[in-house]
Image (cartoon, rainbow, N blue to C red):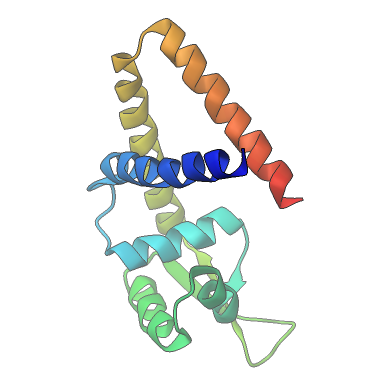
Length: 143
């Protein structure tokens, strides 16, 4: 049974990746890595230091420094001193950065909703149940 579950899980990854890549295509006028940085900060819902972003995205700090600087110049991120650690800076989204991320997710949601039109009502119920169940069980496995 474990092998069957592992195989289904492994098969799910490229399906999700392909589907999401198509939904996400051309949704933001940023490079792939810039988009990841903004999305990561957005999803954390708080200011982050460079080390947190670097380890969370598995990007070298040296590379991240340049990406952050470019996003700051473009008005998507802002840096501020960390009051708890004088050597560190905290990175947070500007209103422009938050807006581009909200717009991206709204566009993805709209595209996904439109793609659901290819399914009949019974298939939509099945997909909803399957996605909910996968999410619940994957969270349980993390505990």
